[in-house]
Amino acid sequence: MARPLRTWALLALTLSLAACGGRGDYLDERIDLLPAPVAIGDALLFVDRNSDRGYLLEPDSEGGATELELPHGPSTLFVRNGTAEALLLSSGRRASSDEGAEPASLSRVDAEGQVTTYVVESPFDSLSQSDDGRYALLFKSGSAGQLLDNPNEIAIVDLEAEPDDGITLRTLRSFGDSPVSVIFSPEMQVVGEARRLAVVLSETNVTLLDLDHLDRRETTVQLSTPGGAPVLPTQVVFGADEGVLYVRGNGSDDLFVFNLAERLGDEEPAGEDEGGDGPRNDFRPSINQLGVGAGPSDLELYDVGAGKRLMVVASRNQLVSLVEASTSRVTQIPLEAPGEQALMFEATSPRDEEVALRALVYQTGSAIVSFLDLEDAEERGTRNLETLALDRPITKLIPMLEEQLALVIHDLDGISLIDLADRTISPIRTNVQLQDAVFDAERRRLWVAPQGQPFVGLLDLDTGDTDEVLLDAAIGSAVPMFDAGRLAIVHGSPLGHVTWVELDDPSRDGARSVRGFLFDGLLERGE
Image (cartoon, rainbow, N blue to C red; front, side, top):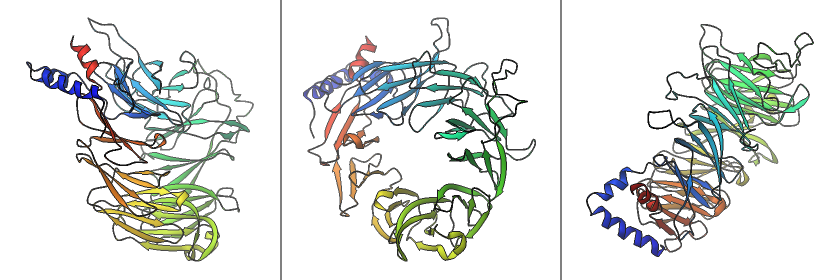
């Protein structure tokens, strides 16, 4: 396993310092990395909370990591969707007798180490981002550490805008609760205009923010009645062309349908200012409730040529409900086995050679899955159902739709491959737990990097062959870098130790280790 000469020199110096009066203990205490690095292109970004520094490490860098100055109080690191960038939430600093206050911020870091910072003033601890990485919405899921804190403060950041122009700060109207999660819509038709929405979910409400008109007030819909049990909205499915939202709540047996096609009347014009809170939105959602079985647990929107349908899996009474979008007519199909989630796919079947839309219904903890052919399902009902039994319960299911496969991870001793077209099962045994296994779609390989072990394992799904790579140290965490052709293994050294496994040459000789890349910065802090 290749190592730069500089690495050996750093290791020798580290050992000598550790032997001289506790210098090694000092080094151990002076670094506090965020729990896991993130991949940015060909590099890994590490963030040290103690020094407000980032370390951008590339596998071919002989001179160690590139150090980055970051805003004060880095707290959470994310991969920015759709880009080779990272997002970093920083909490800032409260004023003290020795130092002035520093504002909270959101920063994006690119592969060249450029840091662009959006100052958001109040500290936030949670972030949701749109699928394309353009928008981030910051909110508070816990205390921000201030004397007084409003949990309904949010920040909307347009990451394609300049820092001075890309921030919208807002305090949402409160009905006794605060944001729990945020879901971004695709571009959808709202009163005849293409727009994007941020949908903020709390325990009792759904709040709609028009991202194309951020000067306008939010629209909040109370789903729970005062004093009643909270609906706990948790999943939103978008009918983009129709301007419809379907909302499922863990605390309700009903499905909520939001229609955004209705424009406010002339007596309530959009743009009318209400006491300084900003102009109204120009739409008013109309809400319908649908009974779809006890405990709806998953929603999927589809079209098989007869108009849009919504498939709802109801876990408590083992039902699949098919809802006709245009009429809200509901057809219920009882399942023969427990089901809580649905995977849509296109394939043939053992009874039908036509490629058609179908669904696999499954439940974690169960060893039985159900196939439902969606063509003519409302007329044929249970005749379109077929069950398949695995030999062990499901812990996790990973779709591999291009291959018409579903990869099932079991709790203790292996995996199973479900052929979605043939509806057959291929079991594969292992001696390690596989909850953190990752799938490389390009190379069709499953990678396993068990924490605490010095081996990386792989399964080639084309051949069924298995192999493993011996490393120099135990695994702390693994960071997939499939686009760059590598798997980065982070070891537990306080001075920094990463092994890069080449995915096209998964061997000990082909791997490259980098050690001591945090060393220079630690010495500078100790001077």
